[in-house]
Length: 332
Image (tube, rainbow, N blue to C red; front, side):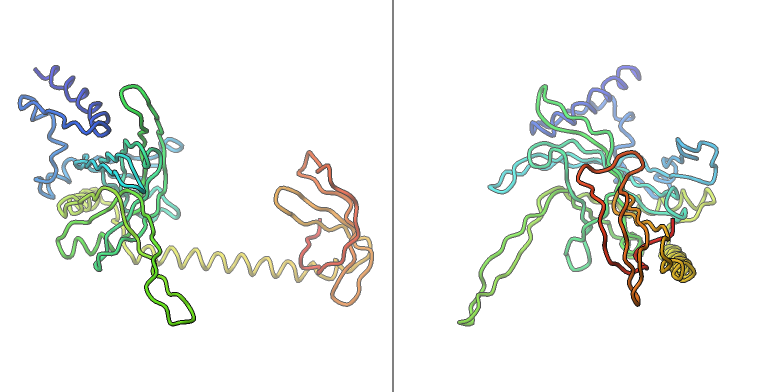
């Protein structure tokens, strides 16, 4: 019986992709209800969500990095949506998991939504993700990674892929504090520009936006359970304070880098006024090389002698003489 149920679950999982495109409701067999437990997380408590949360230690590049951890919940029920309008026509079928990971820049923990999509029509290979705010407006979310693209045209035409989305900490915290679901819209936005009035001199227009797609409802128990699993394992949960500290550190490092560059330029500047000094400048993939021929006040005359990417020289290159500021060049 278990073998038969497992086979049916695999079959039904494949059918979800097809039925999402053909508008057919899949039939679930009551004899396999136990095999489908992970898909019914709406009724689970935070303890149950924590129990079903899995942790991956390390990465494919560094399997021994035991401090790098990614916590992932069981799948949250997906939604299907069909759009038939003059602007858009297509299907969206999306299921998802929640995750917390410190495999990030500076290892600051982040909340993520890992979406599993099978779409066609206007949504066949690209959608956007939005989070609903307090005022009912939708805010565009940052897509971090998109992978596993697989397009097909057998029974129906479409594409399936996975996509990782950054969930803002403040939105997650607000949902946890108010014990309310976090709503994420998956789809596309279309803008409409319409005339509103005229003062006799100028016509006034108003731009309105309409969202097309699926609203994913993330239950509070799923958010709490994920946090609970992370804390019980001894790891840090995402926090605004940690993000601010990381941003301050990054900004400070950037200021130090710029200060070092300026200090180095100040040391090099007198040498750039000396006749015969070899100087260089990077322009895209090309390294431009020249020699100082004379100096007048704060500008130098440069004979451009070479332009190369290390192997090739552009066919249109010709030696030339230019005037420029020494700060635009480096010693080489």
